[in-house]
Amino acid sequence: MKYIDEFNDPDLARRLLDEIRATVTRPWALMEVCGGQTHSIIRHGIDQLLPDEVELIHGPGCPVCVTPLDVIDKALEIAARREVIFCSFGDMLRVPGTDRDLFRVKGEGGDVRVVYSPLDALALARKNPDRQVVFFAIGFETTAPANAMAVHQARRLGLGNFSLLVSHVRVPPAIEAIMTAPQCRVQAFLAAGHVCSVMGMAEYPELADRHRVPVVVTGFEPLDILEGIRRAVHQLERGEHRVENAYPRAVREQGNPAALSMLEEVFEVTDRNWRGIGPIPASGWRLSEAYRAYDAEHRFDVTGIRTEEPAVCRAGEVLQGLIKPTECEAFGTACTPRTPLGATMVSNEGACAAYYLYRRMTDGPAQRGSRIPREELNTVG
Amino acid sequence: MCLAVPGKVVSIDHRADPMTGLIDFGGVRKQACLEYVPDVRVGEYVIVHVGFALQRLDEESARASLELFEQLGLLEEEFGDAWEQAARQESGSEAR
Ligand code: SF4
Image (cartoon, rainbow over all chains, first blue to last red; front, side, top):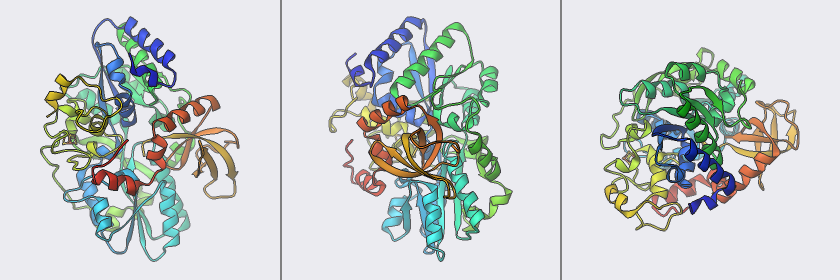
């Protein structure tokens, strides 16, 4: 167990692993929902430290990855307009649209800006009254309250030159879709801790009950993940299916009431298309009636843009945990972070990127954590 | 952007609208919106995501996470120059 020394508390990690090993009597498949968790798992080789019976399946919790291609194309179209300052989080820059990305649009003269917070975009709108400032509002429940605040402020200030291109997604309907898929193998969920910091845990008991699946709210540091796995395995072995909070230092039962009430004011639930997966009912948010005027899709008349996703990219299957990234034909050959075919290869939280960075064939620069035996790597292509 | 990073509240501007505070993330200091943690005090720790404090955190776990983030280079990922990162990615020379 040589890599365990990289943990910030190796003794605790060892104890948790021992306990998992002592508890498990048969194979179980657990899905970690959050892309940050996926990266932590691959980076620290947690999946390889676990007993063979415990399999981790990577979930759809990367907001950059699940943003559909047509939304990216809408963003590119808006960003290329002369009157627009297009603001985005940095990790959207290289997500491929049909024939280019935001990085390219900037190179071609588009005014694309990276902001750290949606409030930075709002500040730009105040400073540039003669320009249209559009913020690319993607993300799960963790990010939505920030974007809600930005548009709420814009309305209060009467800013006519600020709008949001909204592509918000919600976790529980995605869990529902995964559990009802015929090929589903998931037997327990490690729920995304920071989503629950905002939303609380109220949405999960019904899901856990109906699908008889344990849901353990889990953080994304290595020890948090081991603790989440320990609790999930414990429940599975005893035939239980409860909602548990393994991340109490950041998650309260009721979530964050101030953030929740802002969400409720600004957004309303809508169906959303997930990149590679397709439409999931009630799985997203859009601006509510009172804020509709701040919707960039209408303001710039791009609602009609529809695009097909490249057939070769199997990100949809990766995002649903049906295949591992290395099972995709294009992985590491046609598709690399430099020439990404899908968002899961570009995003910091994408599963394909995690495998590429930490589990690549050894002909690249030596990577910490890249320790798959050579035989296995031959199948990678 | 998916990260939520713990930091210490250094100062609070109650008159700012929305309410804002200066947060120290292990040396990197940034403004964050505090509207969602309305009763937070100077010296307490919070978890910050895209410029918004989402929950309070006890000091011990905040320090431990920050140290880990630092080790893993996650702070650079979160606060570093995204254009540089994108250019590095495009030229295929990204090194982590
Ligand atoms: S390796 Fe590339 S092409 Fe294959 S699923 Fe991942 S992003 Fe898509």
